[in-house]
Image (cartoon, rainbow, N blue to C red; front, top):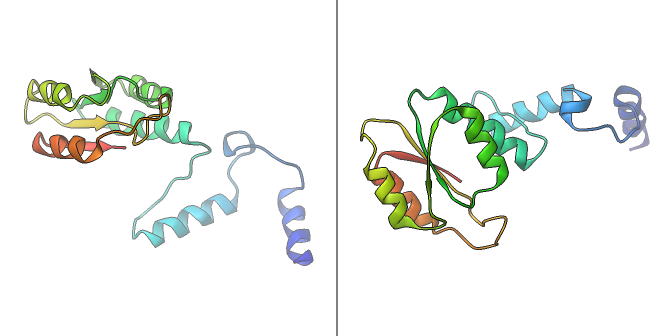
Length: 149
């Protein structure tokens, strides 16, 4: 154990460091991403420094790279989700908090061929209430939308 600690300190230093955004990427990040990708049978994996950056990064790219994507977002979604969608440039439709009837009404007004993404939290961070995930996913599926939780 002492030899491994000494090796790690020599290689990476002994300071508390910072997030990957501050301290940069090292081979441990790359190795863990490769191991996670292999574990899940995927080509690549990406580690984020926080849940905030995961939501912001994933949604800005996902909604931003799909041509003409329409995004349906719960009114009380976390700021990280709101920021990711704002940065995506995608058209947003905001449905009333946990209101599946309103979500369905909004989805029904969009071209069936248009790519659609429904975004919600599982347990809403600001109020602690639980989203009706099964119903949201069923509605999204009926309208050809992908669900992002």
